Amino acid sequence: MPINIQPILISMELILQDVLKPNFVTPQYPAAFREIAIPVPTPPGVTNLPSFIYFDLDNQFTLTQEQGIKDAISLVLFNWFHHLRQKWNGGANNGISNLAACNNVYAIRNLQPAWYTGPRIPNGLVATNIAMDQFTRLIRDNGLRLAPKAKIFAGSLDNDSLTLALTALNRTKVPLSFIVDLSKVGNIGIDAGSIMHAWLHRAGFYNPNTTSYFITECSMCIMRDYELKNLFLPDSAFYKFFSQ
Image (cartoon, rainbow, N blue to C red; front, side, top):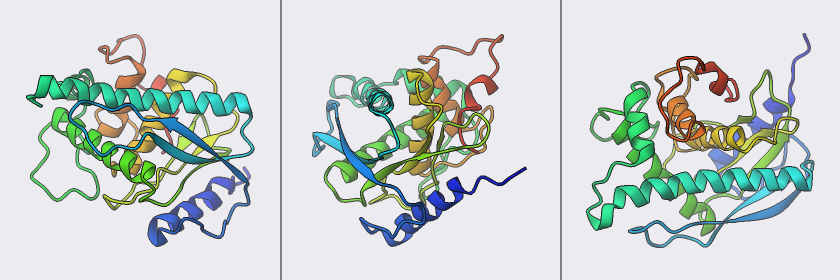
């Protein structure tokens, strides 16, 4: 079976971007890009947010695919916003969001991001709060141009994987770059869950993609609209779209 080297070449560029943090890296994978901007909702209690986040989108994506990616990112942003709004709880900041409640039922492994040095994270609820706070940092660093420019590459990924992103080891100035399979964009629920998974990698969380691991359960929670699992719909029907 021939080896698909395209994701490897793109990953090399992503590694260089993480390590060197330049806004331009000599590409290992030649591509032309166009900038897209996506509005950022403002959750209560959160300040110093940008009005937009920005991505350099691979020109191989059609305008229809571009809109699908923008819609999916907007849905990820909505889930982040919805979590923080529910957690804000009128200013008490002690609420339990739908996302946190869902994760607290199912996520019990790999609750700690790579950069985390605090007390042991006891459950999925606390992990969700940490992850969404890190999303706030990623969004702020992107929109205020503090992080290297995020790139969305068009790629060809193995099996059913829709997105691929590297796990960030740092907490600050992390570019929100990832790969999207050019041939698989089109279902907003799957697209949003897969991009959520990619962003959780950029927030510092690790695979594997299987039941009980935070990065997987959190992404599946938004794909199920926070509902409890259906015994007749296996987890693999969701996490097959996530990169390994």
